[in-house]
Image (spheres, rainbow, N blue to C red):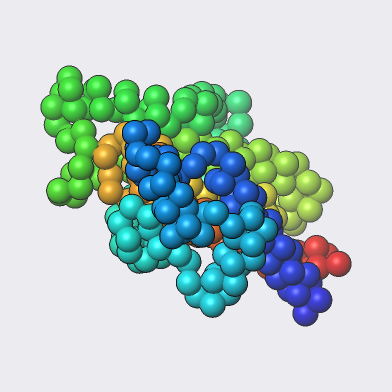
Length: 304
């Protein structure tokens, strides 16, 4: 078990380092922050001074080593636009993002999984077909399209919910629903498929033949064995909570990390973008690590 955990930890560290390296290189190849920050009409002397002040005149490998050294020392850089700590700016936005992502994740779990399990237990029924149809519609419609449709219906036509902002709890209803609909559809499909596969196994028929109540067969034998693929999807959703908020926060003008990322990319604010990407990568890696450990706990055969 110890080697199992150590192997996963090593993979997690390598993944984070790869993401950090990729983000560092791509950001510096995507455009010159000096041109964006200072504008096109600024003299070359001002641009050169800006680059020297932020270390952008150094070779790329020197910038990269300096960046890694600062990260390991706990310094994630300073925002070129706000002249404040990049990590401080990001941490300020986390509560707003969590106000959307946590309720959205809970909606995915409490609606998607039960709907998929219920559909699997009533296979080929009208309920099963209805769940499949709604699930397909849920995860095939892009979040920006779904968000705009919800704004059109509930804000423009009906006028019952605000279309943007963060002033009251009602402002979070539409973005939360937008973030959860796709995940509900995905979880419903995967839960249904996993349950159908498990319910066709020999041990399920054996448990039923022994006279166990149907409720016990489902809860004690079917659901635990169907949990592995479901946990995989849930882990992926937890890992993409911050990344999934980028589009939704932009649509609904929600002052979270996603919107900060869009603004920072537009302004080529390297430190802030790198900090957010590092946080997204760490979230995904940690969630996948937890999923791997849960695999080993649920099925000891996977530890090998």
